[in-house]
Image 1 (cartoon, rainbow, N blue to C red):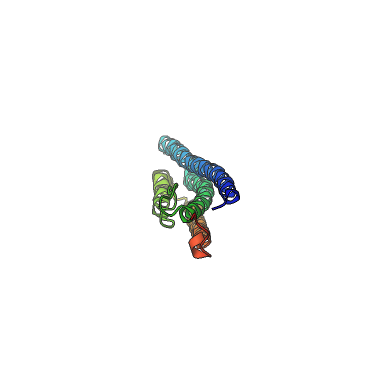
Image 2: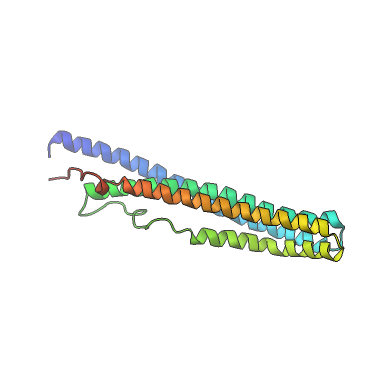
Length: 204
């Protein structure tokens, strides 16, 4: 390999490593923000639930509030966390692509394998987080609906229940959509890895 080729290789490696570090920081920051959002959401739902328990003897309007608010708030928390997830996974897909490029330039001892060892996108944990978040809203919703039922406020009962179910349906639809986008992003990035195209020149 000529001196010029070695210099070009060093320059490419320097640029690749800077991009790698930037993308990794972006991915980790997004994951931390997603986890923080979910934690804050759980705490806030717990506070609203405690309020609903204390206000169990209050009037109709007070009971409707927790029934509608807690699922809606849970939906907002999940939607915000999904946007952070999408940001993290987009960065992760680019990181995996960089790692595959490095692997083919240095096949005997790949320098970076942090993301490329992960196979695809596994959404099970994210569905579990959504289920846990909405499960946390159940006491407030059940208490409110029970109060409305006992007061024969069937119109408010149906409206509040419909609002709670709507929040859940919208959340599940949006999460399914985001997961589909992430899977397509991973497929696109990994199909573009060097071994899927022409094999690049290696050191000789």
